[in-house]
Length: 112
Image (tube, rainbow, N blue to C red; front, top):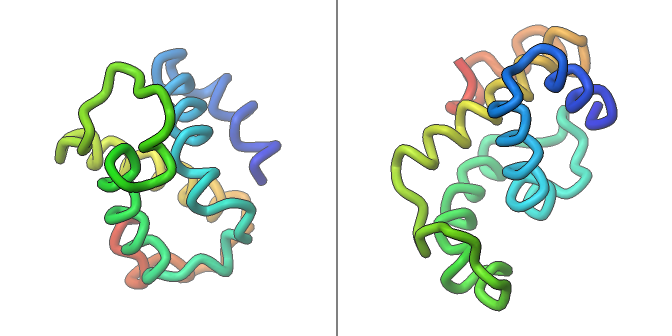
């Protein structure tokens, strides 16, 4: 699905939103979720992402990297933005039938 999502996002989203998906995906989503199959990701894994993400630059894998112009700990608004990016990805996956009907609804707090 990854090979489909970014080309789709490039033609359907603003250039700024697309770049946000690319940057956030490369820096945070891919290192954390790796190549997990979408239908195998469970709520616990997503819940744990937020703690992992808050610690990324402090004690996580980003601590030894040169930090771009970012705070050590992400703000609530940054985390909400990342939540909206995950929502877009999972909603696309559901529309493309990579996820069964009802797979997300009621099970994942990050998708409405």
